[in-house]
Amino acid sequence: MTGDQSEDFSFENFYEKLQEIVEQLEHGGLSLSESLELYETGVHLATQCKELLTQAEDRIDELIKEGS
Amino acid sequence: MVEIDVFSVSDITERLKQSIEVNSEFSDIWLEGEISGLTKARSGHIYLTVKDFDSSIKCVFFKNDNFLFRDRIVDNSRVLIYGSFTLYRARGDLQFIISHLESGDKGPLWAEFERRRERLTAEGLFDLSRKRPLPKFPKRILVVTSPTGAVIEDIRNIVSRRWPLTQLIVEPTIVQGIDAAHSISSAIKNVSNYGSEQIDLVIVARGGGSVEDLWAFNEEVVVRSIYTCPVPVISAIGHETDFTLADLVADQRAPTPSGAAELAVPDRQEVLQQVELLVVRHNMSIRNLFSSLFDRVSHFSSRIQLKKPASELLEAGVQAVTDRMSHAIRFKLVEQSRLIFHSEGKLDSLSPSATLSRGYALVSKEDAAIRSYKGLVDADRVLIHWHDGSLKARIEMNGGSNDG
Image (cartoon, each protein chain N blue to C red):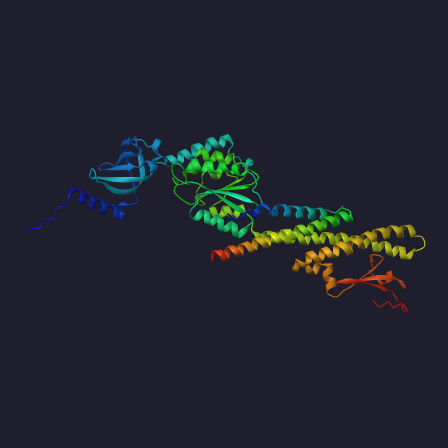
C-alpha cells in the first residue's frame, strides 16, 4: 500500500490549529505581541496545509501517470 | 443390411442430460408448488419433491445453497423455488436443482430478519444516540471486503482521487456463503491489531447480490463485531435498496461502496478552498487589529500636536505604543504578509506589501507611520519604506506647501 508517509502528514492537526488561531484572532482581546505570535504561527500552518495538499495533488498525477 | 442406431444407456442418458441443460426454457426458472417427501441427508443436501394437483418433480437442494433454509423447510408447505433442471444419470431421474427458495408468504429469511432486528433493537444495538461521528481526515482506513473485484477497486480509486493522504488497508474476507459471517467478523475485530490510534475508520463493503448473498451481514456475530468496533464503521452492503442489520448497527450507512468512499474522505479541492478562506480571515483579522491601533495612535498624535507643552507624559506613553507597533510592523507584519500573500496570488489585493510593490512608499518617523504631512516639521529625520527596502531621509520645508 501507499507508504508510511501518512504518519508524518498530519493535515488534520495543521488545519485544526489554523482554525483555532483564526478564531482567536477574530475574537480579539489579545495583546499586540500575542496577536503577532499567533499570526506568525498561522502563516506557517497555512503554508504547511497547502504544501500537504500540493503533495497530494502531485501524488495523484503520479498515480494517473502510472495507471496510463 | 439395415443400419440401426443403437445407443448405450449411458450415451443416451448423457445426451438427454445435455439437451435439458442447454435448453434455456428449463434453466433459471421459478416453480411454485408444495413440498413433500422432504429428506435432509447427513451429507447436508436436502432432497424433496414439489407437486401440484397432478404432477410432481424431484428436487435437490445442495448443502452450499441450503444452509440458510435448512431449519425452515417443512413438508406440506407452499413454496416458490428457483433453479434449473438436470438429469440424474444414475437413476435416469429428472431433477430440479434448487438454488433459492421462498415460502408462500414473505419468505423465511424475511421473517428471521425481522425477528433478529426486533431483538437487537430492544437490546439497544441500533440506537441513534450511539452513532459516532466520522473522522474528518482519516489517516488509515480498514476496508473489510473481498480482495478481488469491483468493490475494492472503486473504493481505492475514489479515495485516492479525493484524499490521497489516506492509507487504505484491505482486510480480505469471504463475503458470501457459509463461512462469510465468521470471516467478516474476525476481519472487523482485526482493527485492534493495528492499535486503535492507527486505524481511524472501518468500511465494511460488498457489491450487490440476492438476499441470500447478503445474508452474512444479517448474522449476529457480524452485527456485534461492528457494535463493539473501537472506531467508527461505514457499511456499504449491496445496492441502495438493500438493508442489512450491519447497515443498521453501523455508524453510517452508505448506499454503495463508492458512496462509502465519498463519505469516508473529504474532497481535496473543497478542503483547499476551506484553507484559502481561513487564510483570508487570518489576514483580515490581523489587519483589522493594526488599523484600529493606527487609528487610536493617530488620534492621540493629533491631540499631542495641539497641546504640545502639556503633553510630555502622554507623548512618552504614545511613543511606547508606537515603538512596539512599528517594530512589529516592520519586522513581522510586512515580512509575514509578504510571505503569505506571495503564496496566495488571489489575495494580493488585500496585502499592504502588495500596495508597496505597486510603487507606493510609506514614511515613518521614530518608528511611527506618518499618515499626513502635518505630522512633520522641518529637519525631521524620517524613514521611507519601499517594497524592497528603506532609506533614511531628512525633511526640508520650503515655504510650507500643502498641496493635498
